[in-house]
Amino acid sequence: MEEVLQNTKLGLKLPTDPRWVNLAEIDLGEILTDHAYCEQKAATSCISLIQGYPERTELVEQLAPVVTEEWGHFRMVLTELKKRDLKLGRQRKDEYVNKLLEFQKKGGSREDTLLEKLLTCALIEARSCERFRLLSLNCSDEDLRGWYHKFMVAEAEHYRMFLDLANQYFGKDKTRFRWQEYLTAEAEIMKNLETRGDRMH
Picture (spheres, rainbow, N blue to C red):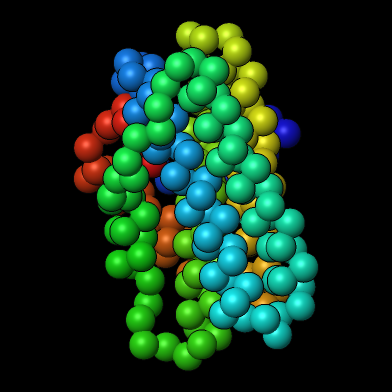
């Protein structure tokens, strides 16, 4: 699993600023709140894809259990907050995801839109996987290190699933070309975003 999680394997062109873990640990209530809403939105994104493309049997069958898994992750974060006597805060604007959505090609066919959505989801999962890995390795709280390792493994599987679906529906060449464009754009987004400890992305 560790091999798969190297940046080169995930494809990410810009690693997370190493200061991020230290910033995230300053206020665990903040980073756990953001994490909780990320899991909630991941479940919602899968539901939206199923609703938008019900004729894609493979997509529906693969995403249906992920909806349950992501909602389970949301509940896991809520449990962790409660265990630490912390409260779920308000949802915040996700600048990272909003910038990725801006990069999506607009005005294309329904099928063109599917490719954009699958690659966006794959990229969000890849970046989440990278950040969970950093927390699993560098968090000062030993219990949280093991806890985040489980999330890291799940995100790696989801990242691969979205890319595999894109390859299946649109072919490896077309998918690879657009994926590289996404990776380049994402690196630029990361470069220009403020490094904040209260955000998962």
